[in-house]
Structures are given as C-alpha cells and as structure tokens.
Image (tube, rainbow, N blue to C red):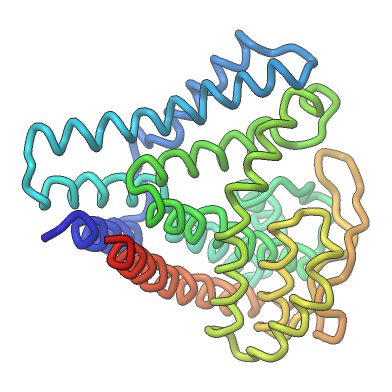
Length: 316
C-alpha cells in the first residue's frame, strides 16, 4: 500500500468514524486548539493587523507543523503504510464535523416540529451565531439551512480538499485556519484589525472547498439546473466569497430562498436574497438540507481521494 493509497484508506476510515461516532466527546483536539489559540490571543492582542498576523502565523503554523512532525514521526517509528493510514484516519475524524453538524441541525428541526420555539431558539447558538430571540420558526429554519450549507464546506469538504493536497498537515492546518476565523475573524470593534489576517487566510484556504461543495450540491440535489442558475446569478452578491457559492447552490438545489435580513450580536445585516424564485424555507427543509450535506460529504471524499491518486500518479 503506497502513500496515496494509505491516505485514501485513512481518509475513508476517518470519515466513516465521523459518520458512526461523531466528534470525540472528551478531549476534542479542535477544542484544545481553540483554548490554546485563546491563550495566545490574550498574550498577543493589540488593535493592529501586524499583531493579528503574528497570532495567525503562530496558531495556524503551529497546527500545520504539528501535522508535519506527527506524520514524520509515524513514518520513522513504523514505516508500514498502515500506520500512516491510522494517523490519517485519526486526523480526519478529529477535524471533520459532518455528524455533529447534522445532529445540531436535526435537534433544532425536531424542536420546531414539536412546536417548541423556545427550545429551538436555545439550541440555535450551538449551530450559528445568529441572535435567536427575534426569530420565528421559519426564520430559524432558514438560519439552520444556511448554516448547514456553509458548514458543509467549512467542516467537511474543505478539510478533505486540503487533506488530499497535503495529508495530515493539510487536515490540521485547514481546521486551524477555519477555527481561528470563527474565533477572531468577525468584524467586532475589538477584532476588526486583529482578526483581519485570520479572516483573509480563511477566505483563501476555503476557496477550493467552497467551489467543490457548490458543484457537488448541484450534482446531488433535487434540481441541478436550479442550483447552477442560483450560483451563477446570486453567489457574487453575498458578502462572503465562499459562503456565497455554497449557500446559493444549496438554495437552488433545494428549491428554497435563502438570505435576507439577519442579526449577529445585535448588529442587523441585510443580505441579498439567494435563489429569489425559490419558496420560503420550511421546517421540513432542515432534514432535506442535512441529507444533501451528507451526500455532498461522501461525494467529496471520492472526488478528493481520486484527485490525489490521479494527480500523484501523473506527477510520478
């Protein structure tokens, strides 16, 4: 079993582990990284882009370097390809969050189906940063579908893309960049300058995964033509260069209308409507979005593994 097949088996095993087990319940590596990044932030914080860039380099660079060291150590200690496959499986399981995404979305959807709006509002912050108190059932459902779409790219497909490109360092590095963006990449007064580098790096790192997610959502959804049409017409209007294609493609694939007014941390945003010819999101669309997300994740595994095998084969 060569290095590329070792990666393929490891990535498949890691994604299967996520599907069967979800995220690690204790000592989650991503949570540990978040705590470490928070401590570094407290030491380095200044209202300056340069200090924020240093924070990004220390944290994301440290995670990537850890992946390099771990991969080399495993190869040195046990040259058998099965050992490298096991490390890849562990890293993939640790950084991919598709099952947790599905569980949180389904929990909100279940509360809405029971008519328990208070429970749905209480659970929504586990999935996204929206202000839930002013949202009715349909607005919460829309927020969940948008979050499922965006996080399919961030928590599943993007990691698989960078894993295929750079192995374990790519998996850990991408997840570190994405986590940093969630921590400091938003435009609050305190983080507008300090988080600039993390936000821009996340835009760059997330670019290929977002486009692959949009393509696969179109292929796996109920309306491929609608997905492509919404992507082409509306994605560029979204303030995020990566969330735009993903949310627009999901909207077209599901036949629903996304976007519009929303509130983050007390700040109201009026975002453009995506797939304006679609119908408003309903509670039942949460389950449809989750099923589409799962199909996209499985397709992404096949595409990225095949791309790695073909690319490395041509290189040799």
